[in-house]
Amino acid sequence: MASGEAGLAPLVGTQISVITNDGKHYMGILRGYDQATNLLLQECQERVYSTKSGVQIIQNPGIYCIRGDNVAVVGEVDEEADASLDLSAVRAPPLQPIQH
Image (tube, rainbow, N blue to C red):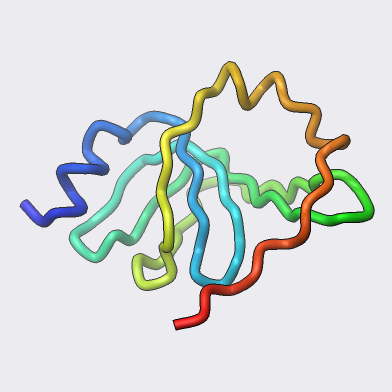
C-alpha cells in the first residue's frame, strides 16, 4: 500500500476539500483514488474566492477527476461547520498557483 493510500482510505465516501497546484479549491465526496493520488469526486463544486464579492460556486455534476500530479492538499471537511458558513459574505484573495 502506497503512503497516500493509508491516509485517503478512511476518507472514501466522505466530504473532502482539495486545493490544487494551479490554485483551485474543490469540495466533493471522495469516491475513489489510486496510487498516483488521482481523485474521483462526486457532487463536486469549485469555490472561487474574490476580495470584491462572495465566494462563487461552480457546480461540476457527475464524477469529477482531479489528476494526482495537480493535488497539493487534501483535507477532511466538517460538514456541519461548512454548512453554517455564509459564503456570500466571505471575502478573500483568489488562491494563487503553487510555485515550485
